[in-house]
Length: 313
Image 1 (cartoon, rainbow, N blue to C red):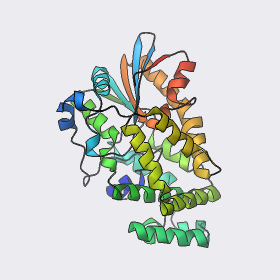
Image 2 (cartoon, rainbow, N blue to C red):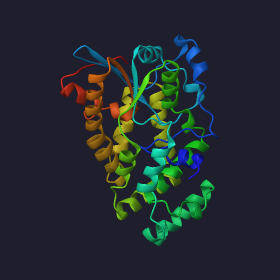
Image 3 (cartoon, one colour):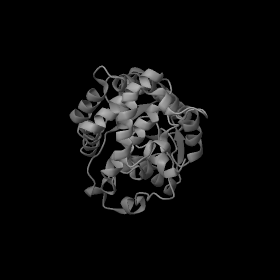
Image 4 (cartoon, rainbow, N blue to C red):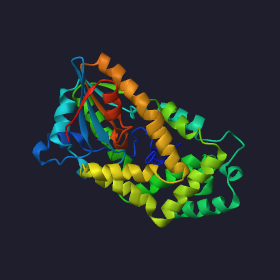
């Protein structure tokens, strides 16, 4: 699978992230790091976690971006500089594990295609969406419905100027490399993409139909722009409102977000952060913004485990 297509597929995956592509321009992190920090606005949200003399910083990221998002806010830049390790969901510099996970969880075995797994009506809707995105059925015929849905959302975001190659993770990784920091992962590509593969055929078709509907009526772009805007302005009420919207309602998409993002991943991430804090004197943890929100968010889960958690902004 071409790297460009990998990037588009994973643009909007709540769980997946892809590696750097040769045909994708990286954010100019070096220039951003040397820019005047006082001019950088607050974005996302930042916490300091303390326990037994050890410190971690939790920073909320988004997995797409624009060059104007950098440099990051001074408190974030200083926290990263003071840390001995950068911790992210996945080290997105290595494409091979992600490709293996896609082959395992997102692609049908030889001889099967998506056509056999969709109703005629859903297939007709998919063909229209593919045509609008400039893709052919042949391009995606072996992809499972959840993968096609994420691909189409990714294509739309890129068409509106939000690039996976300018995601916050790339900025953090580039800074960590320049500062000679260790990079640690909270999860694996196989773990993340396996979550989507827990949906059965009926759920995957519903997930695809829901996303096709949102793409058609403009809700998909609006939800993404709402999240990006809330992150860009470090607006807690708006961030919380986005999470409520994404996890509310009787849809497969909302249930997946609620059960997997919050119910499964967050507690496991909290346990991983605990293990990392036992290893590193100071760790900077950058994870998707919505992992840090609400009663099931990482800050609250760590407080429940006896950690002192201070919101810096």
